[in-house]
Length: 490
Image 1: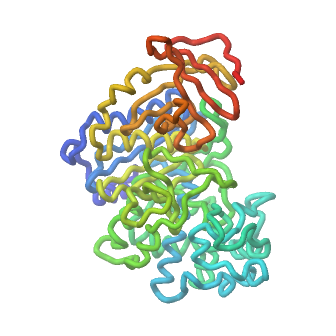
Image 2: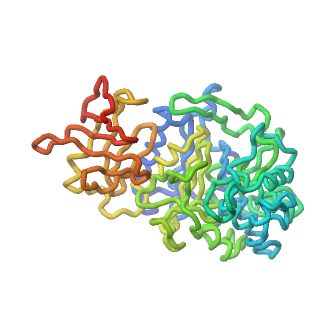
């Protein structure tokens, strides 16, 4: 870590022992141990974990490699491509202009961007861009990353393409809409989105290691982690810092690079009601807009549920913010956590009631480990009431069951008790919370009602196997021993 970055982190979040902040060392080590396991089993190439309790750093560690092929280990000064974690800063930039009376959230985007002055796009409002309710597509980048000359040209094409759905009709995650929001900031402020964010957000917050990487000469580029895509154990490097910048210019949907320590400072701004170092950067009204649930989140590109590792909570979207709360239509007061994630494997969460911030960054393109870690964070760091006390009726179900179908070959599935709930831990996937059994004894996955499990027992009630029900088929997973072959049963 550079001297300046180290000094800034120490000043913002000084180091303390977990016990001094009311957290057991064992709990912290359990979260760290999970990330170590991700590296060991190939779920990620490398990563960095930061846990801040009561504004004190109680864990900050790195794991694995920054670049596997060049055998460069992960270091605490590593900078990550945080992808969609750019969106919250774009949202804050818009809110700053609203605070200053330079725009209204209910303004039509066409008021500022001529490309939106069409029959299809003229009804879209700035607020709908921030809420992902504009109806605009996920992306319009179809040829190459530098398909457009600058953000204004890109926004013009977005407006001309128009929405896929009636604006305001439903939530539909849209990078295109986020880029249009950034273009509005540029048009009103007279400067580029990267310069606006740097001057109005990054510099006041002391985020010296956060920037938009679109210039090859930026000296911080050499500290950026190489990017990998693929799947656990099958990672392929597709970008390294020695090459040309990944993005041609700053967008509103992505293109930001940051560190866990820097991004924690940004989340602290939200936790502190828009105030940083005694100076107000955002109004109370702006914070309320950001942290008020508007829509249940849906999976990218479809109307399926967005995966979530927090049991008993659902992910919702506010204004450029991911919010976690129980139920389908929660009030702001019910929000238990907020933050955002990025598709290259980064995630950051703030838990205001616990005065807790967790940032977990990796450069392995997937959100599986990020969502899995949510379950562990909840299980060991958040307040629980006898969550470890397994009810007697569930104890016989807990154990190891071996899958031998589809992509699984003698793969151990674990029935576990996590966060006070029965769950199924599927390796390389998620820890799936299970519902109470229906009249047929089937326990649905809470995340999706398309999959369920039941348990096969002998005449004495001993559990012999787990039966997985999916897509009209059933697969029997024997307990405690692998099998050579298992075919689906009708």
